[in-house]
Image (tube, rainbow, N blue to C red; front, side, top):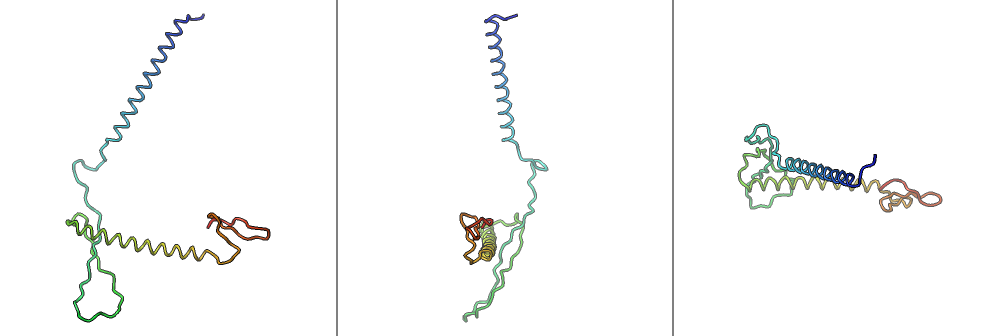
Length: 153
């Protein structure tokens, strides 16, 4: 049995309304979950209690040298003595800044050593021979009838 045109239009309208209502509900639930996740407080062991300070910073202590009028001979100076102090006990901003500066200089020195070692290894790998070339990051090797790829460089 065939439905009349009016019944089909009414049914189509009610389907559209149902689909729109479902989409609106899904959008509201999604927005609620999104906002709930953004405003969630970080999980802590006990509420209202500050976490214990466990990190330690290193503060360089300059070696004391007696003042002399004579210029000292060229000698290798030992590394400055360092003391470790818990982070919570450093109160002055100058001490924190000095600590940060010393650790940053040490990190830069270590990075420089690593970079120099890496460059030395790269230079050792590069052969002075005319049979191997580096073109666009590809190592090319000379063969009897031309050049072939031989890995990356």
